Amino acid sequence: MKLLKENTVDASLEKHVPVVEKTAYGIKVKVGSILHPMEEKHYIEWIEIIADGKVYRHFLNPGSDPEAVFRIHADSITAREYCNLHGLWKL
Image 1 (cartoon, rainbow, N blue to C red):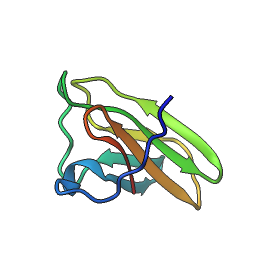
Image 2: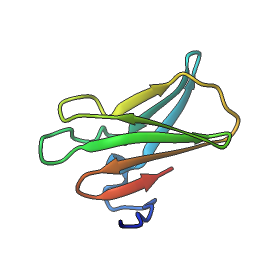
Image 3: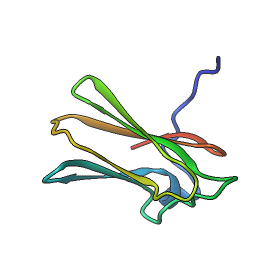
Image 4: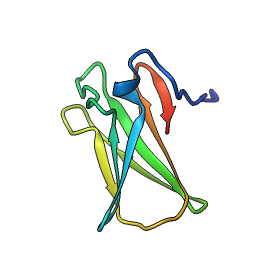
């Protein structure tokens, strides 16, 4: 088992740090202000939020959009995502 360390700063920051938006339906998280590639060899494996002490995770596949909608409403949110090449990132 390997402990994952969260990254928050990167030279390609615009492609790895989660972008969180509160909507009428809940919380929308996109990976990167410029969307992260979702190719067979380089993609986002999952997006998660930690909200009010609970963890919610959405798994992704190559070819899908690097985003997820969590149908919850929360006051406190931390968003994280895992890139298969560059590791764990958080907002």
